[in-house]
Length: 630
Image (cartoon, rainbow, N blue to C red):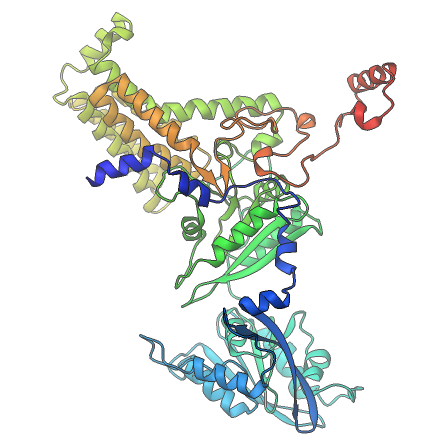
């Protein structure tokens, strides 16, 4: 019954599900942009119905006035709106909520806001970081010099913070140079430290323990000052990481050879160095309840459909998980129809491909220290393309794409076709070839299906072994497995020589897939076609192919049908299976519904005689409108 229900769900579509799924649509007046929906202020009616609003309060300490900003006051649905509440009551409520023991936790959570006393802050941090058991959390206590002497401490993580920056740009100015004369009559102690004494390029103030702990674990150095209820975070990230190198899985002959690394900021910087535009937006998020991971959502404002950005934010913020180490897990959380085998997102290690995708209206997702970036939404034809296709002359790029499409069908169907012809339809091939096949299989004791499965599993074993074993002997294993073992199997009469050719050509076809996830799809579906061909022959292959196509046309990538602009048919950029000349790629892909549809001016080759002739013909017709002529 479970198998029957699975195939029933695979071949049927529930209209109610389609109504609830996200579908990308053009931006209209009724469908405002992402920024407008995010920054729209709440009115009193909305506040009364529920949600949150910001409350600004001031408190007095030691004769000085301090303002506490961004204190969130939550309202309750169906209750009267909360209009005012004292700062002390807010902190007491927050302390009661956060000081409760969590299930399965062995230590108390810290209070929300930073304490005034340095000793209290140190005691809380020691409990949070399990000191002195935790050996790589360093607390350096010192005293600020100058006229107003105060105790302070700096806390950082050894191994991910740069000690040179800490010594030369934090401790030395605060301990030795803080007695310099400055006009600081109007500055408080924390403002003087932040604006006068610390020469760091990124210095921020926080008032909560959550922000302080996140910055410490991210590689920054956080300063606590006695008598001050805010902390100062200084950018000191300096862990060891792999430098920018050559891409491994998406190699190209012509084009850039740099690839993403495990450094988060280096990855975003590689893209921004290629797209030097102020419209390039990078929004930061964090995932993980046990250990946080940085997430960056990058898009081109004014080009991308804001509904795509809003949907990406919604799906990422809905992820509640302990730890996200790699972008592959994020892909599984946010993709449409996760039970399918066809990729709905594009993972790439090439910064130039991400930059080009952003200009087409896609959104890039950077995940922590992962060297692979996700591009959404994606079309199926993009999985068969490489960045090199755009850098070559258009006939060559089109030729390479046709080779990949043919290789896709070879890798998917060739073993199944061999089984069908041999077992069910021998009349479809010439007699001489059929006699050759029969003579080569005369000594083979296994049926054709078993013979094909043995070879296919052998190829998968060789492929997996070549990845896992050390790189020094990897090519040797490939040669031994492909040549010596194959020749020995033929000589022993276990495998027919023609099947060796079929399996080798099939493996070469799967190796031409430019996308790693797509190659897995082909490898898995190949066994399904082998089983169908073994039972029904050509009819089984056609039936399974129809099922696969029906499944593919229902798949979406963030609301975009993956087979568009072919199914459904839409007028779009001539960049699917074939590639048009660069001067004819005037519009962006229509399935993404970008705000700015045109990427270049019509008649880009205005110097060409053909363009001049077309312009002259338009003038002869009396058409003086330049836009109309174009």
